[in-house]
Length: 179
Ligand SMILES: CC(C)(COP(=O)(O)OP(=O)(O)OC[C@H]1O[C@@H](n2cnc3c(N)ncnc32)[C@H](O)[C@@H]1OP(=O)(O)O)[C@@H](O)C(=O)NCCC(=O)NCCS
Image 1 (cartoon, rainbow, N blue to C red):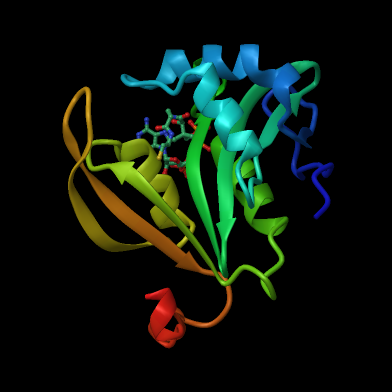
Image 2 (image 1 turned 180 degrees about the vertical axis):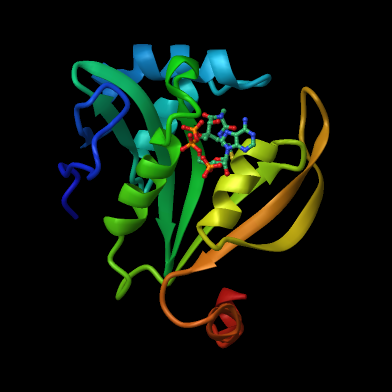
């Protein structure tokens, strides 16, 4: 899968957003952004673990020479699970979160990835609004999923190929030993 592509239209400072596969050299900045946007942030070791996981697909977004955001996720069978996603506070509300999400989606091969899924705090109205704009649907509420502070999660999904019911049917048709 190609990771080096650019967005159109231009990013906030007039330069296009450029994506790159996340690696260990990015983690200082990624951890700083993470700590500035989340109440219960991931630590460096969480990102290191994510980079080493099977099916890992993690990106960083650049505007010029500034690393301004990132996505962390995993391919699991026909699904891509978006586990973490943030834009640096100085760059929020300028359309860059939407650009990063759109570039992530555009880079997925829908023949191999039929569904994207994520969890989001029920209070995170910015993120929920963005996901709804990109046609994510709420599949379930996971009670008490988050800690510090304890909070429910919305499980949101977006079918990339076929419909939500196609995907559920396919999941239910897994061989019984895989259920
Ligand atoms: C969620 C996040 C990635 C959005 O990035 P962003 O660059 O600020 O978002 P954008 O400027 O691209 O806005 C995209 C849409 O998000 C929604 N949005 C963004 N800021 C919002 C706000 N303050 N209030 C309500 N909706 C908001 C809107 O629907 C907006 O679309 P619009 O501009 O057409 O109204 C960013 O707020 C962030 O990093 N938050 C902290 C980390 C986080 O919560 N990550 C998601 C975890 S599931």
